[in-house]
Amino acid sequence: MFKRFFAWLKAVFNRGMDSLEDPEIMLDQARRDMQQALIANREKAVQAITQKNRLQGMLEEAERKSAQMEAQATTALKKGDRELAKNFLREKATTDATITTLKSTYQGAVETVEQVKVAIKRQEEEVRRKTAEALALKAQWKQSQIQSSITKALEGLTFENEFEGSFAAAREKIADKQAEAAARQEMFSGSVQGKIMSMEDAAMDAAADEELKKLEERLGLGAEATAEAAPQVDATADSAADAELDELEKRLQQGQS
Image (cartoon, rainbow, N blue to C red; front, top):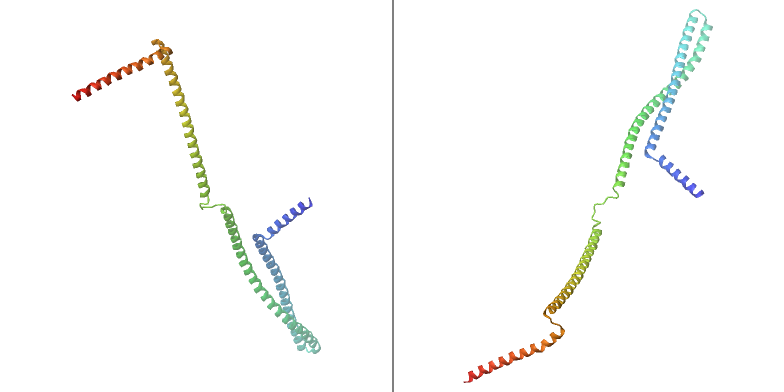
C-alpha cells in the first residue's frame, strides 16, 4: 500500500516538474519577471527623479535666499547700518555654502537620473525584444510538438514489401491444399466409378442369367438336355472334319493323275 502511494506521489511530482519545465510556461514566467523588473526599475527611477527635483527646488530656494540676503545687506548698507548689513552677509555666506553643497548633490542626482533614464530605455527595448523572441520560441515549440506528433503518428506506417514472405507462404499452403483436395477428389471419383461399374456388371450378369434361364425354360432345355446335346455337337463336328478330309484326298489324287 505504501509502495503504491509513494509511486503515485512520485508520478505526480514528475508530472508537476514536467509542467514546470514546459517551455511555454518558462517563457511566460520569464516575460512576467522581465516586466515586473521593468516596473520596479521605473518606480525606482521615479523616486530618483523625485529626489532630484526636490534637490533642484532646495537649490533654487537657497539661491533665492542668497540673493535676498545680498539685497537686504545692500539696502542696510545704503541706510548706513553696517552691522545689519554684516549680519545679512553672514547669513548669505551660510546660504552660499549650502548652495555649493546642494549644487554638487544636485549635479550628481541629475547624472544619476540621466543614467537611470538611459538604463530604463534600454531595458524597455530589451523587454520588447525578449517578448518578441518569446513569441517566436513559443511558435517553434508548437511546431516541434506538431512535428513530433506527426512523427509518432507515422511510426507505424511502412511502404516496404515486408509482407511478401507471408503472402508467398500463404499462397504455397493454399496451392498444396488445393492439390491435395484435387487428388482426393480424383481418388474418390475413381473409387466411386469403379464401384458403379462393378455394380452395373453384376446387374448385367444377373439380368443375362435371368434371360438365359427364361430362354431355356421356353425351349424346354434343362441341365440334362444341355449335357446330352454336347456329345452330338462333338459328333457333328467329327463328321464335318471327315468330309473335309475326303475332299482333300480327292484333290490330291486328281493332282497326281
